[in-house]
Length: 198
Image (cartoon, rainbow, N blue to C red; front, side):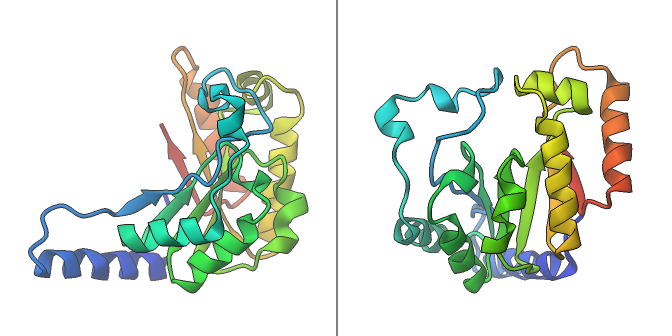
């Protein structure tokens, strides 16, 4: 995955500092989940199967900041559910950026384009859009038609406004490798800032 030079330098400095302090184990990335709620019901995800009272909960910005300070990791990944459903996600992200944390806000892209006005481009912020294949495969994976096109439109809009955009792809058993190659070729044409695969 492409990493911004400023991030590479900051993470490198963090690693050296931890080693100089004699620490053998330390966090590098905090997975901060401010909610489990989602606007999709993907077959490969179990988060939305939580009880309703859990799905209704949101961490407050203050709770998020406390977790980040306690952890100390330089990188914060914000998955969900769908983080853009959180009513204070812009406040959470800005607070993390102000703390010079490198934030990867993971999203399925459905709400991204209409949420861009809530955020400011920064070398500390990347939107990580989840795409599991080209149009037909991705829409099948998320069990809703049109999601691929919505996500691609959001990627284009975010890039046009100066945001860093990465993608993450889950490769399911039985997926044709050519499908993933076609997706990565297409994302390269869109000039995304990095691609990851699991």
